[in-house]
Image 1 (cartoon, rainbow, N blue to C red):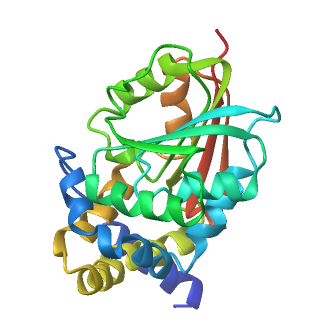
Image 2: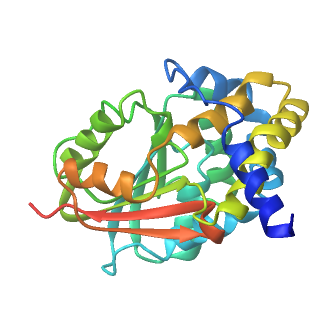
Length: 255
């Protein structure tokens, strides 16, 4: 048996190892509050600093016009909003929403350190029940958060409602690589290594098992583009990042 046949067999066997259950998202913000103190550090370690590069790429995809009003959903510790202000001059004001109060507290401290309190406001709020009027934001972003919604469809309806006509949605989310050999290594890391490291560093065994389960059950790539289309968005493009380990989905509201 040659090397390619061995890899083929191992890939096939690994794909069959387990049927990943789709975990409950009910009050998942409580889990994020539990790991809030180590959340940023774990993101850097477990992604090998790729998360920083991915957010910079997101900032480059803002619409061209200046003086934008931006809403960031599942804002967490405000990494996306701070990246947008640090790498783009197109934003006038931004708001972040998240249900996890402990995460928001860390975000407020980071915003204050950069003296951006007058430009960035972060508030407790639900992405499935956005507390803003219709047609209110030029751009809406959500990074590593849409897969945590109880109903992705309800979240997208709310995003569509508060986005201005011709406004842009940018979704940064984990995905699975198309290359089957890269995919099997990625899944091995996600299923076997990442949960152990995450559990050890965060002290929360559940959190990083939840991560791999939600990533594997999320409708990434064309499937998520179809979900965006059904929600009414147009000009939908998926941009794979780092061999397909994550993707940025860009979509627009044209009503």
